[in-house]
Image 1 (tube, rainbow, N blue to C red):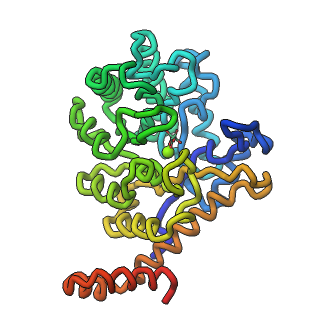
Image 2: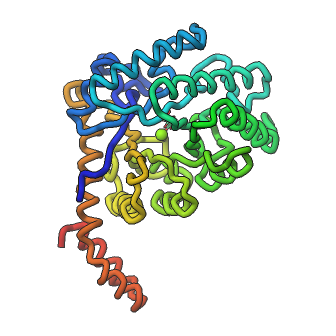
Image 3: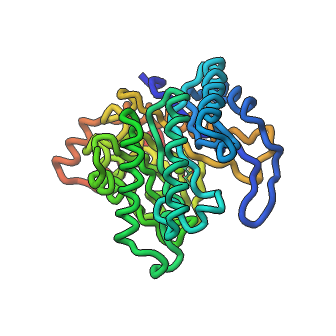
Length: 344
Ligand code: GLO
Ligand code: MG
């Protein structure tokens, strides 16, 4: 049964290794070359920022943007790949220094809305109906800088604008509690889903849960996933791993805490994640120390770990688990799971 999952990653997951304290350490790889890597690494889906597809989109009119995006769709087709989603990259433009949708500057807010509409055009041209919103700068460094109630109103207004612009799209909000901001306005799955219910068409607003972001919020990623699954709102995932409360590490899936990864796979597999067209999305970073020739191992390794965990999940003696739950012998259940993870 293992192998029925389809995997995706974004071109930013193959990168040059710069960090806030040092420059790039690897050559950059062209987008066309990156596309050639996907199938070899076992991936079928490509996650896009809008400007991954149309790099200088801010200088182009809507028609030219669509034309260039259609060209990218052709490139995908040639490689047998599918676009999973498009995410408006709102956090790099000078106009969004203080945020996009929640900026105090009305011109910046308008730019963010216009740019989101262009992302929707790109998604249509790439033949996907999924838009991911990572709300990078929608927060503050100091609380007094913005009004937190108005910020939510503005987020709702921006999402409504997108829902009205296209009747086809679905929006997956990707919550994250901090980084780059001190505090983000939509830090958790619960916040993201509640925000969706304030919009004009909540049936089309769900979430993208990233392992590391849940951990940074002090939460268990598999429980976050269960919460979204209960509402039918887990549109996609960003699997990776995170070693405690520090910068967003985007480590290979399962590489820090195997049991935590096992439980994510378990909840996804149990509730048929993937059978409704969802991809198993990764958002992982190669370590800066990795040489260029081997700087894609974080992707293939994460996929391999996921599939091995699918095997472990499916070979777990669920009858034994149920018995231990019935006996309320959670100490024994603890040992049983750890032994299972150790192949005993
Ligand atoms: C950063 C986010 C980022 C998004 C991506 C898609 O912390 O995880 O990588 O997932 O930009 O919107
Ligand atoms: Mg992510």
